[in-house]
Length: 107
Length: 116
Image 1 (tube, one colour):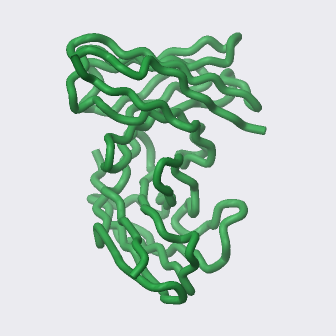
Image 2 (image 1 turned 180 degrees about the vertical axis):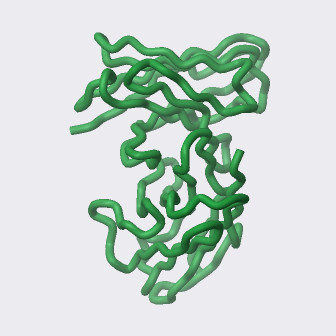
């Protein structure tokens, strides 16, 4: 199975800052990577798929990049509603796997 | 619009089996798949398996001996059955609709606690 490793596991930032979360795949997954945001007690929400395509309704301050084994999610000008947990997931065939998550907290 | 909703037992005793139903609307199970994902309290997401429109299935390699996913197309329901539950199976269980592998639609989740 493909292993997905996210870093950092936690991150503290202020409103207005720019942050980057990284995700590494254990083998080449081309651009088959998705990112999700999850708020406490809620279901995950799709942010990005195919490594860089924003899901419908996702603000343009979010951007995804990368290919192969190295990927990143960048959030420009953090807003209060951006705090929560973020997960990467490869969609290069089953079994799909998720990264361990990054918890983004307010500084 | 696409909707998914899980219904489960809440509490299950160790060594027993878990059955959860996902009822969908806004799409046909004959054409689209449904996946199951779980999340232990305070931990990350774990993909469990998928049933496709043609009824074929794929499972998490570590759960393949305990997990079964089935469906009733006429009732728009997908079923998860997990056998021989242990305390580390305690989690919120989600059903989700895979697009080309990513999940744009999720249910609200159902918390299952494994405890005597």
